[in-house]
Image (tube, rainbow, N blue to C red; front, side, top):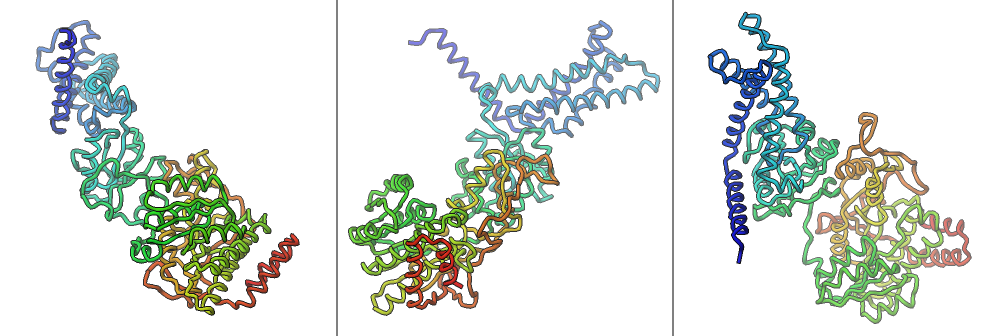
Amino acid sequence: MLQRNDRDKLITIGLYQQLLGRIGNIPRFWKRAILLAFDAVALSFALWASFALRFGNWTPPNTIDQFVTVLTAPAVAIPIFVRLGLYRAVVRYLPERAMWTIIQAMTIATVCWVVLVFLIEMSGRGVVPRSVPILYWALGTILIGGSRFAAKKLLWPREEASGARRPILIYGAGNAGAQLAAAIARQGGMFVVGFLDDSPRVQGRDVAGIRVFSPSYLSTLREKYGVQEVVLSIPSLTATRRQEIVDQIGGFGLKIRTLPSITDLVSGKYTINQIREIDIDDLLGRSSVPADPALIADMIEGRSIMVTGAGGSIGSELCRLVAKSLPQRLVLFEANEFALYTIERELSEFKNIIIVPVLGSITDGACVRRTLQDNNVQVVFHAAAHKHVPLVEANVLEGVRNNVLGTLSIASLSFELGVETFVLISSDKAVRPTNVMGATKRWAEFIVGHMAAAAAKQQTGQRFTAVRFGNVLGSNGSVVPLFKEQIARGGPVTLTDPEMTRYFMSIHEAAELIVQAGALSKGGDVFLLEMGNPILIKTLAENMIRLAGFSVRSENNPRGDIELVVTGKRPGEKMYEELFYDVSTARKTKHPKIMRALGVVESDRVEQALVNLREALERGNEPEVRRILFDFIQ
């Protein structure tokens, strides 16, 4: 049984909660009216008290002149308060820095009141002591500021104690923005300071009880309300416009998040969980083409699939896609123990398929043969390779051994053991290569073409194909993880050359297109993935800095957070990459993002070149290996 004191306490808490609920439900207009009325009374009292303190006479005003004098305080101050936005701020979420705005407003109001008093004195209607304005300013500041923070403390103690609610701005005052603001008000964690919108028609108006500002006011709102992030709430926003907005607001050190695209929002209702970080691939300007389920099912469903390099960035994404597409078996072939453990653990949730982890190297022919035979592999996605350009350039023998002879090993064994489809993951660096990594990828394409010619000659029906594309965002060898690490350390972010460009696509899109290209293969073809327009690495770095909530330090912005430092081009690096040897040879396929080019190769030349390359490798003659490598692909 509850004691009487406990019951009384619970009743008091219940009544208190009801009171808070009723106050919270008062329309915004009436809350502002109450606040304005309180300020009028408080300012009048502050002026009367100032005179009373100066003259030591606490008699209430009892003449018309005294009443008029007292009322001049709110008459002068309230228009200034309105102009400075004191009635737009929500008391419940008032930041501490708002006290400076109140002090500023009270100072301006006092100065204006003194000017008015000076004009009155010139008309011969009495003299105001010099101490009265000082007393009025001090009392007014205490009453106006103190009342607001006292109300916040008494009426919403939890928010005051936890400080969990963070101020945000919503970019876009349309239906999506209004629904998002309503969802934030219901679920908490944040509160909306205001909307930003480009349309002059809505600027200065209220949407869902919240003021709409021009984006040019962002700096002022950040200073005034301590805004920490901006949420883009325009579901139909194009990548180009999103990039423009990021450039516009990214220099203020604010976190930028977004709602999903309009194609992902079918319910028309928004929750806080739908707000997500802006990925760098959101700014690439790439048009989205949904995957063809029939092509993916044709390659994967009910088959035994093997992915080499299964723990790498491309390999692991291929494994995830394959696992979701109902294969009979998925073989994870990986040389790195921890990478293999990580991807196997991730895929263990797929209970309806057989997951087979194999720790081994593609240069180990016995291991490859055993794996293909024991698992009756029907499709091989060959993603295993050394891809880091400077490291392969410094380790030529190992790069050639793994990328060329490793590809030869697994491709020839796949041909021998009757694998139906073999897909090589190639690179745009294979086109007119200037580095060892690119040259080894070109050799790998020749090897796959050689196997395709052998399959066609023997009419085995096997398909050997290569898929060539550019950089993928977030892959282990790309600049994105490096930039993220440098940004997390506070910079600087290093660039090899500010004019260097690269093609980019997301890992998920690349994996989907690889599988679909394999399904389109006729054997002996090289597929080229449509990569959009190349982008400056410098632009990529600047975007990543802004999306992380920092500003770029430059000559125009010497107070920026993170600096870009040019280190110079590394050995073997190209200023720009190409996808085609000859654009005229590329042919469209039924998929708009996939093009086909014939992999023309003379089998006899490939066989002899491989013999020469293997002999040079066995002797450990690096200059000879490099010469053979590049001479053959000229």
